[in-house]
Image (cartoon, rainbow, N blue to C red; front, side, top):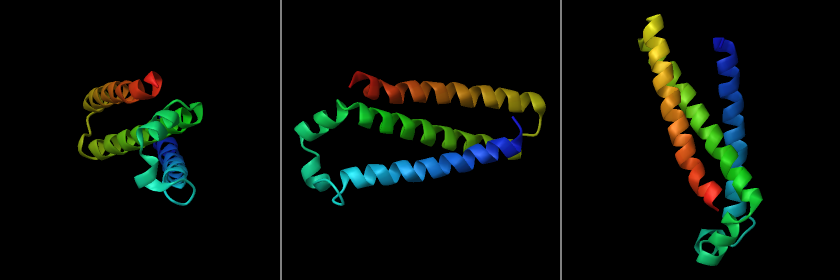
Length: 112
């Protein structure tokens, strides 16, 4: 992928992360709900985890954070690694780790 597209994706993911974090904080802190102290009872958490709305928010947040982070790590490594084959190998390793962490992060969302 061209570097300008990767940079654009990185910026858009940053915006998405900011919006999703604001949604998360608005729902779970005292601006709307009971706040963390009252909102973390077993009943509240289990009700929240059974809602498709929260599943979508958590899935989008997980995807955005992981993708943003791994693109950033890839770009930092590419500043030091200049060989074509080494970059291909690093890309494969990074995306393999990305897929493993994404699947591991999706397990609780799918289980709920």
